Image (cartoon, rainbow, N blue to C red):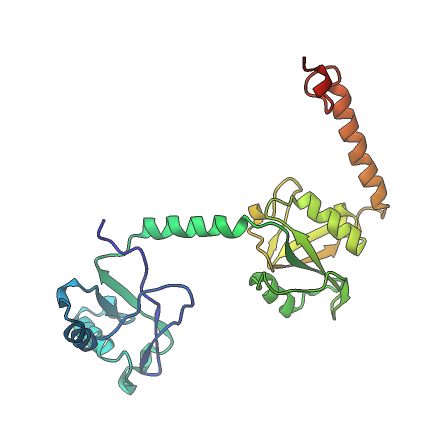
Length: 266
C-alpha cells in the first residue's frame, strides 16, 4: 500500500520554538517546505514525490477562525521564536501526513520487536530486597526503565540503603517459580513470602514466565518479605520437587513414557 510504515518524530512547542524529539532508532524528520524545495533542486527530484505534513497547534480544533493562521505559524517556525504564541509552551503538537501513517503496520512491527526482545537467554536482571516501609523513588524509577543488557555486573549480593541487591542470570522462558527459588537461595526469603514487583506492577503466581510479565534483560525488580509463612530450608523444597518427579515417573512405569524406554523398543 501507499501508507507510511514509520511515524514522524514527535514535535513539542516550547518557548516560541518547535522542537523535534530526537530518536536513536527511527522516525521521519520534518523540514520546512522551503528546505524541501532547495533539496529537490539540488538533488534533481520532483517536489510532488515528497511526504507532506500539516502541523496543528494546540486548541486549533476549538478555534476554526484561527486554525489556518496557527498552522502557518507552526510550519514557519520549525527553528524560530515567536513570543506571541507562548500560550502553547510545552504542548505536544499534532502532525497529519499525506499519505497517512499505517497504524496496523507499525503495530505489527512493534509486536514483532517486543517478541524479539523477550526471547532472550542467560541475561542479567537486578533484584533489590526492600526492608523498609517505603520503596525508594530511585528503586521505582530503575524498576520502570530497562537497563543496558550488555553491561557487565557482579553476581554477588550487595548492600544498598534500602536492603540487599543481587543480579540473577535468567531467560525469557524462566518461570516465576524458578525466579522465586533463585531469590530464596540468594536472599533467604521463602518463596511464599516473596512479594515481587516491577515498578508498580506486582508479579503474581508461579506458572507464568518473565516474558509474560514483560521483564527484559537489565530490568530491576524489587521484593519484600511478607513474613506470613515460617522460614524453612530451601533444601526441603528441592527435595519435595524431586519426590514429585519420582512419583510422576512411577505412574508411567512399564510404558514407553518412562525415562528409560530405549530397552523396551525392539
